[in-house]
Structure formats: C-alpha cells, structure tokens
Image 1: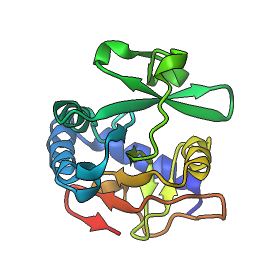
Image 2: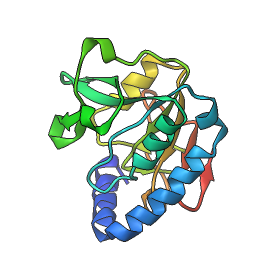
Image 3: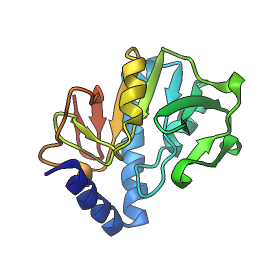
Image 4: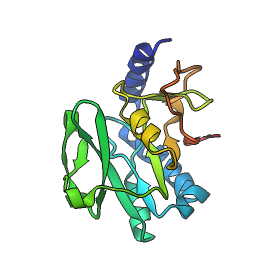
Amino acid sequence: MQKKEIRALIFQRRKECTDEQRTKWSHVIAQKVIASEAFAQADTVYAYMDCKGEVVTKEIIDAAWSLGKRVAVPRVIGPEEMRFYYITSYGDIEPGYFGVPEPIMHEETEACSQDALMIVPGVAFDKNRHRCGYGKGFYDRFLAAHPGIRTVAVAFDFQIVEEVPANRFDIFPQSLVTENNLYR
C-alpha cells in the first residue's frame, strides 16, 4: 500500500475506536513510556498535543512536569518548518495549524534541549518502526536537524501495518510503544 492508502485505512480505524478504548490504551502506553529509561534520563520531553484520535499525551506531559522535567510542544512555522516551545501549563496552548493545539509562541520559550526525549506521533507504523505521518514531513525535517534527540513513537496496535514505504528522507523512531507491544 502507498502512504495515502495507509492513511485512509488508519483514519477509518480511528473512527471505529471508542473514546473509552482510546483512553484505556493511551494510559497503558503512557505508563510504558514513563517507566522507560529514556524518559527517566531526559531533562526535557518534546511531546505532541494529541488531537483527532491520536494516543493521548496528557499523562506523559503531566508526569514530566511532576518530575521537574521541562516540556516542549511543536508549532508549525511557515509551510515547511516546525519548532518546539516550552510550556509550563495547558494555558500556554492555543489552536494552531489545521486546528492542532500549539504553544503560544514567544521567542524566549523556544526549546533548545539536546538532552531530550521526543514523543513522536504518526498515522501508521510497521514493525520495523517505519513511520507514515500526515504527509508534510515536519518531524523528519526536525529530527534530521536535531539528530541527538532520543525518540519514542506511540501508537495504538491498530496503527501497525504490514509495511510502510520508506525513503532516504524518512527518519524512524528508536522505539515504538503500543498498548501490547514494544518495537526496537
């Protein structure tokens, strides 16, 4: 399947998933991430603000804050760039690119930590951690420019497909956590 077909399939599966299932599975996934060595070692957590049926990241963000870690979330800047900005509460968020929650942008809050763990979203993955995003390449470009950041993707089991086409520009996460599996 091509990425366009994979996206259509997973978006349909998301629609079939109940809020109760999503909440339950997100909790299991968050607990695995929070218990990981990568999370323990990071001084900063780069997380996404979930929307449209993605794995909920609130529990991961709250755990990071409770442990004194800094949290940064992405904001789309122009047609091809994404930057991360530190937030200290959910009050630092506003609707942004395509209605996705984004941080209120202040120059002094741009994240610059290289000792960070990034929670990577995705529409679909395969067992080799190849990633199908939303098609704009924001995460691939950001990670190519920041190769030292550790990465863990989070997804529901129904987001795992047989094969995600990959090219030389695609960057896949170091690990992938679902409610039932861990892929490295």
